[in-house]
Amino acid sequence: MSGHSKWANIKHKKGKADAQKGKMFTKLGRELVVASRASGGDVNDFRLKIAIENAKAENVPNENIQRAILKGAGGAEGTVYEELRYEGYGPGGVAIMIDILTDNRNRTAGEIRFIFSKNGGNMGETGSVGWMFEEKGQLRILREGLKLSEDDVMMLALDAGAEDFEIDEEGYVVYTTPEAMESVRQALLDQKISIVEAVISPIPQNTIEITDTDQARKLVRLMDKLEDHEDSQGVYSNFELADSLADEDF
Image (cartoon, rainbow, N blue to C red; front, side):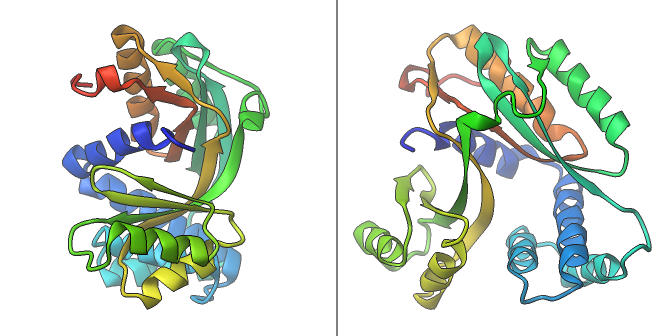
């Protein structure tokens, strides 16, 4: 998986720097509602537990979290969101997938198709690029304030069942199978290691290195537009930016 997080790092830093807090709260709130509805409001359910922790990591107020959980547990009351995954291609044929929560799939499909076409890509059929990805658990750990050494964190994660361990500018990303994610997460928490993000999402089995600045800029713009869509819960791709583009302002 080496290199996978290069886009994720750009997205992560960009999100911390300039995302509107209200938009982030909305996305996290939707996930809480859906997870709560699926579990009947059971806070011990894995998906709901992760949704709660991700919301807390972004400083979503506790009353907002509880309100979303109650709304989801209420069943048919309120807005009903549908979970979808759209697939397509970006400039140069790179594969892109978008996870969606929407209350109007026809509206959202048209808007996502428009974003693709206006930014040098095209929306594909279901399954057109999905076969290039594999679902993995990802646990993000910040280096700041961490008392354990890099080697200690890595060995702890691997001994707990993690598949891979990656270093980035802000800390570490631990990769697991979806089934092992909870046990690895708990092993890290037991050692007082703070996890700032925990998700299960598609990881490309192979990546395409982008060396052309113009193509890179177009891809980042497209990814930004897809990320910013109000129904988008996550955007994934199989490209990585070459080291030679590290200092470019995207």
